[in-house]
Structure formats: C-alpha cells, structure tokens
Length: 181
Image 1 (tube, rainbow, N blue to C red):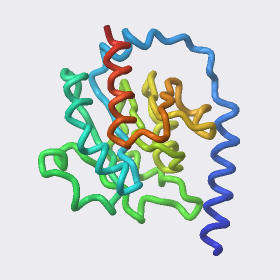
Image 2 (image 1 turned 45 degrees about the vertical axis):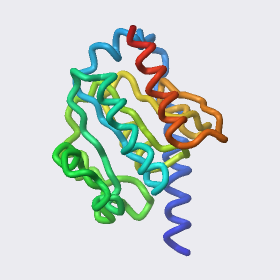
Image 3 (image 1 turned 135 degrees about the vertical axis):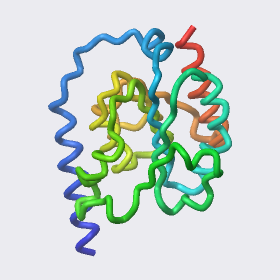
Image 4 (image 1 turned 30 degrees about the horizontal axis):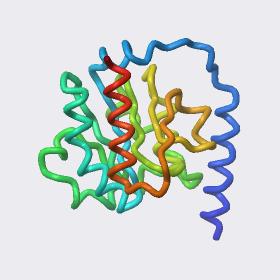
C-alpha cells in the first residue's frame, strides 16, 4: 500500500516536471533519423508487448541498419531475450528503481552516453521508460501516443488499438522508414 502511494507521488512529480521542459527546437526528423548512429530502444514491460517487440526488432534494425542499438530490458524478460540481443542489452532490476518508481542516478552512469535516437516500444505509459527517455540527450525521442508522455517525447505514433501488438509496431517502423527518405 505504502509503495503504491510512493509510486503515485513519484509519477505525479515526474509528470509535473515535464511541463517545464523547453519544446521550441525545430527538428528535421528525416535528416535526424537518417544520421542516427546510436539508438536506445526501451523494450516493453508488458509480457505480450515484449514478445511482439522482440519479434519486430529485426525489421527495426533493418530500417536503421547503420546504427548501433542498445536495448533496455526489464529483468522479468531477461530469460526471454535471444542470445544475440543480450550483448547490447541493459537490464533494469529492482535495485535500479527508487521507492518513487523512478530510476536511480547510478543506473545512468553505466551506459548513458550520447544517443541520437530513443525509441520507446511500450504501448502505455511506463514510468521507468519515460524517465530514461527524458534523461537522454537524444534529439529525437519516439513513442506510441499517450497523453502523459507528450512532454517527454517529440515524435509520437498513434495506432488503432484493435490492431495486434505486431501490427502497431509495424506501423511505427513503417513511418520511421518513410521519414528517413
């Protein structure tokens, strides 16, 4: 019960902080996507979404073939992660999460180099992923459309909710590829 209250407080505090972020930079998304070399992919926490994201990862990788990918994966999916993807993956463990539901500063010290692009594969608001994206230096931060994410991402994709997870991810990848041309 107390943990839920702390998480709610942490989420509300974080969401209020997003209203003070500057949003006045104009970005040429096509150019920025085309020149992206380091990409941070925030994998979904939801098990069904995670399986779909893993299945669709190859298509994403092919559309941005020159880039180096780093995946952030919740520890509950560590066993389901294919061996070739484990090399460039970082696990979020319970130790990395504060009582407010945010990610500890120490978590960022291990990997938070300059990323050109952040792609959040969660379909719904996921506090840890949104927090990581907000702390990134990436000029382009992409996610699926959600009202609580708006202050933290600058490119959002809206898909039909009745579509399968794979179809929704395919739409995102399709438009990322189209923007690059």
